[in-house]
Length: 255
Image 1 (tube, rainbow, N blue to C red):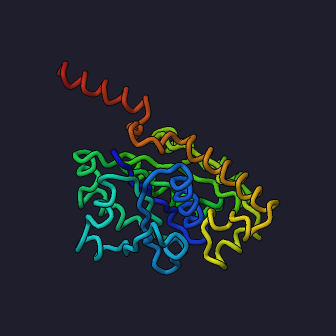
Image 2: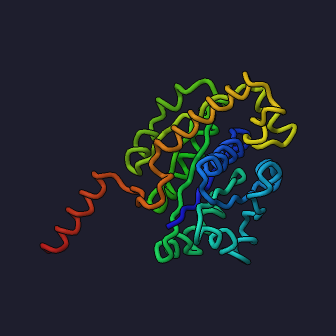
């Protein structure tokens, strides 16, 4: 079984591509063969930096209508990391449900998960919750607090719908660690992978230690979701919801 990791968040500028690049580096460092897909055509940082691993696929209604299997087929034998553009919920919903990718995946042993990146602000959190409400019953989601893009998380902790949805759909909330801005800027400016940045002839030992520490924390956060093991089926529904369904079926049988 392979899994398609959709890295999104609906809002631009929250660090989606940064998380996608780090997840790709995770697979590289673990020696796991994977495919990368860059669908954020406007700012294709992932494709230009991880070009050895990445294909470009425009994620739009027209593109998915013409070739809905372009991304899906990559996952028949390996995990796939997809960097999504912002404001993608309608094409994504069409692809997953109307084009029956989720159902196809059940037949082929391909699963999906949606990693939603947020900076803690309302205009970042609310779209993520809207996505979970619409798709949470079909594929698992992860909510990522990007500490490199946001510092205030009180609104997220107090949001009235957040607790409801995260419990109902088993949505883990993880913290994505901050990275020294000098490193972030160099990675982007010189179009470097983390592996290239850590080459001794390129970077001082002190800064290589900074990157190794960052990656260790990021990998621990990724692994804490339980979704990097594609052999384990994800949970989509709370125990309460399952109990309610069972009680409903029992009432129907008695009737």
